[in-house]
Length: 379
Image (tube, rainbow, N blue to C red; front, side, top):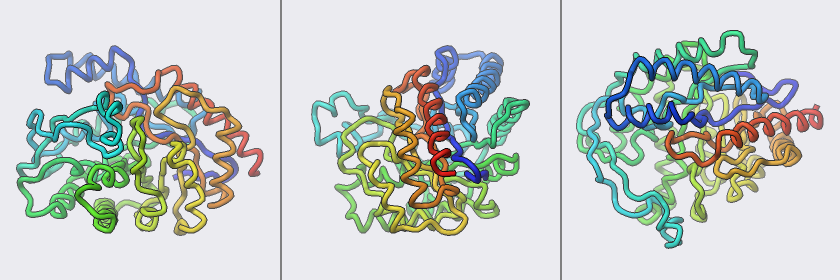
């Protein structure tokens, strides 16, 4: 994993918006409707090449494939794992999070209960062909493109099991470890291909506002420890410096007033076997938490990818603000340990576009511009 040796490097949360024609294909495929498989494959290959080029043009140093062919940052895994059965409308009705329930006028427009896959058998990995396609498309897209590094995102073990009922394993813990064992094949495949692996785990901070009426804070924090242990288990055989671990509080605009604080989960997160911890930090509910890292020290060999750009609004940040945010982190953890990123992906769920594509590219350009300003101040 490249670090900020002589300037602040830039990256982002992984997913980028999909163009309308590709989105229509993804929606048809995801819904089980007829679609032209050859045309879809060709379009994904072309779009991955396009987004890689545009990331470079925006000044992004560490780029991804944009997850252009996936329906969502973790729902893609449904076709790569056995053991799950989808049942329509089996989620509890109403908003999923406590912050939404506190505000009825917001709850009226918030996404309601959705269908959830149920674990009904042994979890195994069968996504080898899809993973190879991701790798091949990304390798082809990177040919002749001058960037520092490439990464591919994947769902963390806890994310896959976060909201899925278990009817097969004896316990949640047993299901988590089975998921970790299955996903290890995907993780190793990404790293063996020469790419940095990003594990996406919004389930860790988001579990509390979802289950705060069922769990005490102590019970929640104990579960965070379990998720860290399970994640480390899934990364057996993978060098920590090839892994970045992303947590956020959900890529949705809402009050967020029940969000767990970074200082409560940071002591567990720094136990992860990863080369970089990636934490949302531009969200106004969490922007002040850069100071947490004064007290919670990063272990040797662990960098911090800080969310510097918001991914929920169409406001383009000023490059001076971007620079200020970066410098704050650098002053606390050291300039060489900071990489500037976005809070989350811009296209975490393909068909829920919160930021318009042209604004997304403007935000990424500003991230690069602000990092250049910060670099001049820090070096």
